[in-house]
Image 1 (cartoon, rainbow, N blue to C red):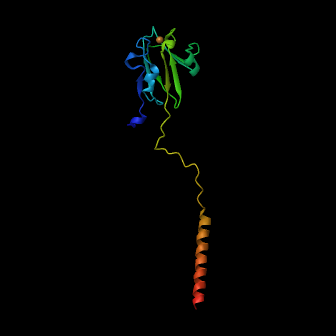
Image 2: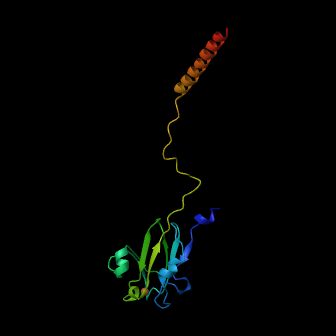
Length: 157
Ligand SMILES: [Cu+2]
């Protein structure tokens, strides 16, 4: 069982009002009340004879331009997966006037939370001293100690 923070969620866009101009939903207010992560799914429910869902670029979202969608959804009950982290997904309806009326939503995907089970390696670790130099340092300090002890013993006599 995965931790709650990593479980994918499905969000019904506009909640019970769905994807429509009829409910007078502020879709960006709706989106700002959620935290979207990669792996989550957006569910757009709407009357397909009156609406659709276009995924568009940022500029086409701003200008309600419907002529160059990145993706088009038409079924009336669309499940759209959020794939990327730290990114925006822009959706509009292409029925005349609907986007201008406010049937548009900017989904901002939250940055991915680092997985604590796989910490990134330290950026700079000095290489450990090689065994030969370590043993050389050890033996030379022992040698100095022995010489010093010998000199001390000699001076005492
Ligand atoms: Cu519409």
